[in-house]
Length: 381
Image (cartoon, rainbow, N blue to C red):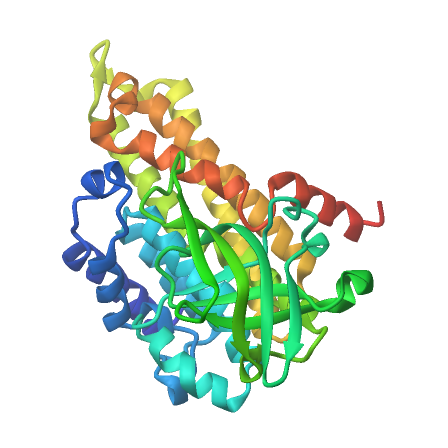
């Protein structure tokens, strides 16, 4: 594995950072307070091509390889402080675009991917239900074939982009008695009859990302919008969740790097007892810990990216990357607040917001406890 970046890759990342720092300058404090989606930021990212990094040029994307894509997303996290927007982009990319790119028919790809890649359509992914969270395959949403369409009935929870999405991947079962083998995936447009956005969900962090509860009341889905085959939903979900777990926190690496640089600068200039606080061993140790977490998390991310780029299965590595990056992000945010002392506790610096945003990463795409269980199983335990 060679993770040295060439000039072109470095240029792409630097261009992403410059784009963020010069273009994505909305008032994050106001957006978060009002729990408002950063639609202008979304449009600008779409115009730049952020949503199309991994998508084939045939469908309007930039067609970057996997490692270059995550390196660019690392730059996105470094340059953009709106973690809610970054989370929405990640859900759109890994849980909607990639399954269509992998399992979609030529007609489905041509219909949806060009607009998804440009951010003209907002994508989402609905699998979680009130009684089907970590035990995702116990979902109760049903699908029944009626002529040239399916009727979907059920309730979905915690749907990222649910309130604003134009297209949602919905998982339902054709027959609960068939268990996993009955699960099927559908491409559901927001204007389909029976598709209801029931409630926007307010959150502790990632407040600019729009999360909703959805109802499907005899929702009419054309048979042409079946993604994959009947009963193949488990394959679609397993494929997408591997990529999602491995890469959904790529931008968090950039965020952690930005926080570390901010803390180093503060520790160099903040004076106490006639010397910079960075000269005190306990403060310096926190900075070293932040650096160690960053580099270890980055290595796990890059290894997973390399495995996927070479066409290998990497379920355990995805779980390891998701677990370590999420836990490291939270701890580094706590250290950043501690290093800044009372100033870090104020909303003005935004560090408390970074912590609230980071905490969600321990829950979505499978909780940390689930990642531990997955890793243990691959270890034969």
